[in-house]
Length: 523
Ligand code: GBH
Image (cartoon, rainbow, N blue to C red; front, side, top):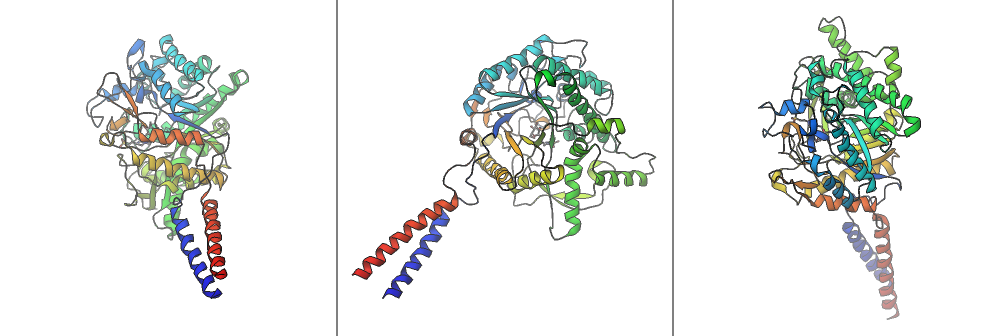
């Protein structure tokens, strides 16, 4: 009798145990981010401001590019965009309401310097940013400024743009003016956003302004100028401003995660590693170590030689620039969106995309966004963070962008975006709590729908929906805004964690079973 009772009890335990497990959220970590972890949103000047020729603003390469028919998917422009030039107070209200700790926005160089040079300084342009900065601070939201998010003054393109090293002193002058005029209140500076995109899409593929195609050499030259310009802006801050202003300067580098197509195939594994080095390493390696990654050096040098060139297409930093560029960071800004699969594939022509001998693909089961390049692959984020920790000695990382696109039709019920944010922040949380990656802030892209470059308004990344046909450009919070508001307020995913909640259930079932058993035995 006793035996059969125990057997019954054990069965009950097993059965209830299973049930307890299945009600727990699947694969979710219940944990908080570190106490000092910070949350924010990002935008960029050309994508939101509009006011393209307001109050003396000069023309930039995106004005020129969008005003040339055929360049933008829906033939749209950023002439008005979200009209934040007139609506910045509403943007601050949204940030306040959602509980953002900081706001990452960029300066329109030609709004401040209409010709790109110090020849003319626009006080109206400076006033716009002063008003925004002051309102943010009054609302307890810290400003984080990106100096350059792709909108080069047209006159500087007219002298050759980023492939021309003559731009270095121009950028240095612009940066100095920004430190001078805003640095008393702004303590977080990002020199460049995604130089990769500027160089490859702008000067290689020609899909972004200024629309130049010349993959073999132009992007490499562009990157070289940008890295030097970044280094100058970084060093100059320390020489001229740091003592008085005590801010921090970094650079934002974009990278996907690159995984081997077949993890059991060593050449796929090597291809994936090479892909991360060609993408993230192209910019980050010089910033940390003063030179391009060895793999890039070996591959591009070899191909250049085979092409019969007397010089490698990948330039080199001389001793002076090596010491300037090396160590030019206080934090590493990281923009991450997606993952690609890699295999060994000999390049077909000359240029960055072919020099690495990698073929890229996506797993068809990965959820699709409205952007053909963007799939949801949350584990890639954690892997990239761990790769950064391993390769650069666990640097301080600010995630400066991460986000998801959908189409017009989706509207306010943006469940896929909520899912993306959930899964990606979970992957980051794991990298922080379990692998001790030094990530200290997370910035969602974007505060609101905006001008998505070559895709116009056809791909929406915002957590606020913007009506682009209404002159007032009203903004309405989507489901994802409510989700992030909660995440920010909780600083993670609180609650009894999966194990302990299952455990407490376990104890209840156990005592209940023994109660029945004892009752049975006593008759
Ligand atoms: C970031 O780029 C940017 O910093 C931000 O401004 C942008 O809005 C956001 O992500 C979302 O895209 O139009 O076919 O030439 C992320 C990397 C690189 C992805 C350029 C889109 C253009 C594809 N982006 N790419 S195409």
